[in-house]
Image (cartoon, rainbow, N blue to C red; front, side, top):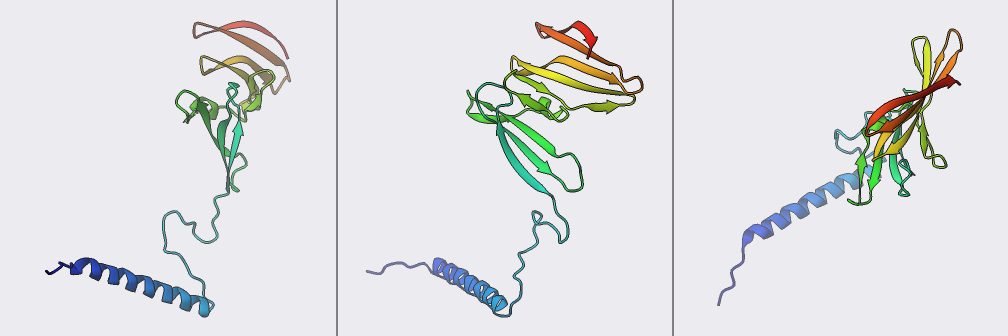
Length: 175
């Protein structure tokens, strides 16, 4: 009785072994000659002399629901402000979902004790403003806006309330 043997798998195996042997010999020769082994050019590699900065991951409860959320911070040496992408943890779906509303805020600061998010001061023309937000129905709601006239140094605080997804101005006072 004759057992059928296919030659194709054996030929493929020998070709792969030869490729591995040739690759290891060229790498070994490069190390012996004290040359650098350079990886193949791929789109993910950075060209020499050009850096992208650093990427950090920060876990913080941004919507004050007791679950840690995720902020991805990319610092670029050429820019003063880092770019940040915000992800909120969805307990029901057991995954992170990107939140674009947080990404639109200027330098947000999260205060867990008051459950508020305050933005940094932004300059527009002759005015500067800062805002305070809160969460309602999983959406950011503007609660207060402080505006300062840079010419007169006059500051005014405008407070808002939300009823049925409608914003109502409830008062204005000096800062």
